[in-house]
Length: 259
Image 1 (cartoon, rainbow, N blue to C red):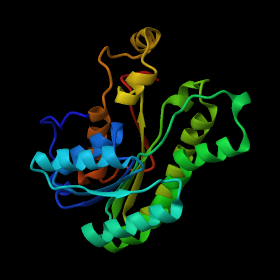
Image 2: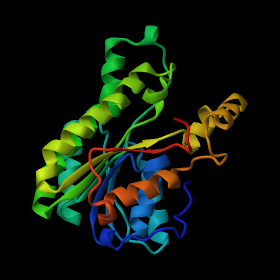
Image 3: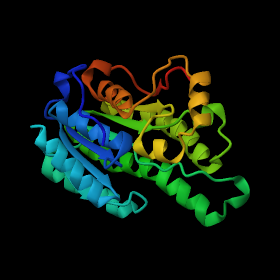
Image 4: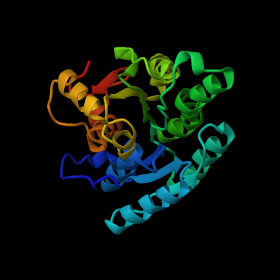
């Protein structure tokens, strides 16, 4: 379980703001839910893992923060995602912050990728981000503006060789961010790309944090500390808040100095 937010920055502009998060049931997404709830935002999130997500709702509620709204959804089902966004707006008001966080970095090699797997990697890592942005656009116009935070990855910058379809999708997210920022800007909607490094989620630790991986972190990062989901969530809070009101069409890298 991700630890509750520590006493870092408070953003008054986020209080009462309607926030929608994809993949909020674990890892970075869970930390996003907790951090936005701690800012007194009205949080809604989707995830495919219902048990873990309902546990997040109960845990956040127990802290005294407002209970987040969980809507079960597989983001590969665009119609279901759009329906979830509509329901979140109905209950929490027009979405003013979208965190396009959901993704899956399963390892694979080029020779093992067939057409179905390729399409699935694009669906789970890229396609839903575009259609979520499309779906929130009219709501953000109604609200008078908003902030969209698309989640990328340093994998395409360093050219990771063990997940080429994932790397391709994450590279495309920055191009999409730039295009949407230009199109949505006249409506006072900011679009940025938050780029995490190797974040110590439970999944990463369980599957891939080997002694060799530890040595790689020590060699590549400028800072000796390990990245945690809260480090990413705190940047997302800044990008969502009015404090970053003139930040758009940019990448914000949080990787301890890896790239």
